[in-house]
Length: 197
Image (cartoon, rainbow, N blue to C red; front, top):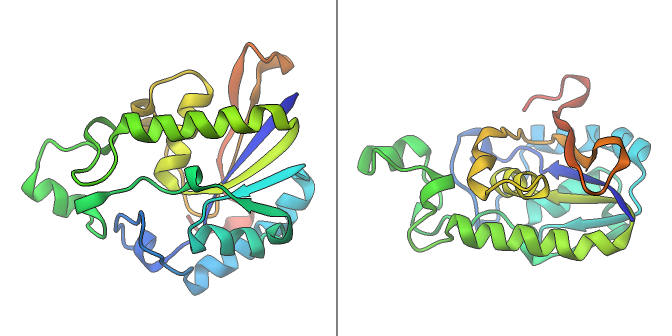
């Protein structure tokens, strides 16, 4: 039985540091992001995942490598970040300047993905990992990780809006009292050793 899901958001990139929506763009980890990812290695060793999956985006793959799990990781395209379409590379303030009522978790992105599409990807990931058993680590992204956690506990994708997820953070999904009928978020947005978010 799947006992625990570890969500790891990739380390800082220049775009994440400056608040630019980064979906398909291959943004490298910043120097700080590399240090943040290295800082994850002791925590990953303690958590000892049985299986490791990563987004196909290089920033997630590099974070996984620096965290000491790259040799064991398998890429899963469904773990990629939200496709921001026409909003790729823009900051939220820039989008709101032309569309004041916009909300990613409600509206999605023109030319990109809707919340229903991202929710569908999250559901596919969860369906694939449940039979794996043990502990599974997922190296992914901010917005997608938030939707994944919401779906784990049976909430709508839009409820991920309430779950802030910093770069190089660790979150854990499991069950209340080990009961598979009671999925729970048991740790959220942990940043170890003063790692900046």
